[in-house]
Image (cartoon, rainbow, N blue to C red; front, side, top):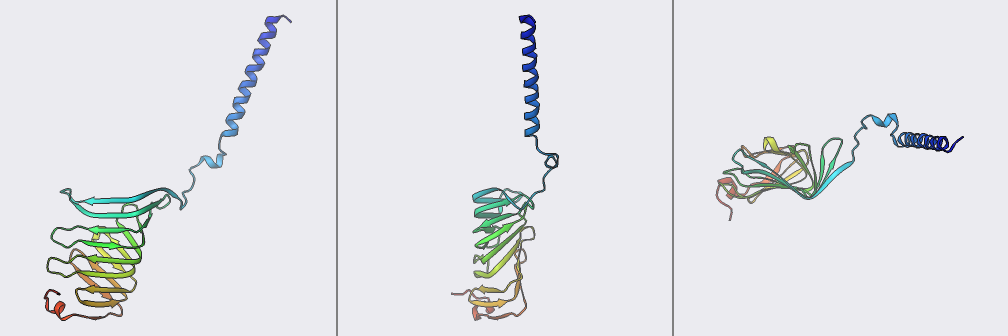
Length: 199
């Protein structure tokens, strides 16, 4: 065997070994066939934000709603997010600002439903002929598109000097109508009953 044929044979063996090694490496790093299909989404965080804020604008560009939280954690399976110290504010022309807060909360994928928990509170600023209104409960659900806040939990309502308690509540910010359900009890102050401003 001459030197030229020996060199060619060594080169062929080296190339075959390199090709075989490459094929083995490819097979070793390829995921199993069962993992090739799209994996099922789990209720696991896929991103988060700190000092989170999102606003919804009206057709003129003015802010209608603003949702803020000190922290937001988003989950991949249902597109819902957990919120820490959330606050949602409604800015409506000709109406007092309404703010709903809680220690924690959740928001759905399109931010149309916000649930507030633990020391949840609604505060409507005084103005436009109405005194300040405050409602406290363990849970409030804000239906953003309907401009409605509701709860199925016991609620304490303060409007001016009047205080009322109930088993459930529905507040429509468009009509400014408050509905109380269940065992409703309260004291209506004379100034609120007569429509006079509380001093």
